[in-house]
Length: 239
Image (cartoon, rainbow, N blue to C red; front, side):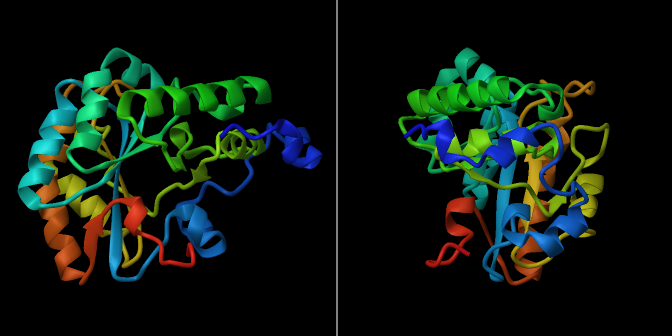
């Protein structure tokens, strides 16, 4: 359901151009753990941004199937429009579809109306392709502005960022990707990876991610955590 703009505070709209929350990963985890992606202490949320991609996403799905792991995929609406069958395959394989916007543009560089249109359009495209209503929204580059929050509310979505990433958009080896995640991760955290190279300057960067996935599954075991999607990351009270 698209919520009316009047349901959002005037103050939030007026402050659209300022980041709503600090971007620093450690600080936002301490101050706003739910937004940062902290959940059940026996669980790690595995998430992917920027797909679907006709090469990368199936490769990721294949490894996840072999590991018996499900994840949340934050999809770009433009990518879904190009590859709807890949988006549908994600959900058919038991994974969770989420929204990353229609285009991968920083919300600080966009007006509030433009941001709202982008997010609501993306949510509609993802829902149409996957046959599911998405729950989660993550803004491009992790830049959450007041306009981002307005758009999220209007689209009936919940905002979430991450607590650990692999910097897998860079030219990195699988071991480097896994080591970067390991250095940031704690039980209850959310891992950010990518199943596309459409927003990077390193063609094929996703290949390191694919090979790193078994290493991350081992890391989850070492922490005594189940690796899975965001839908399983919160307890029954929504925390």
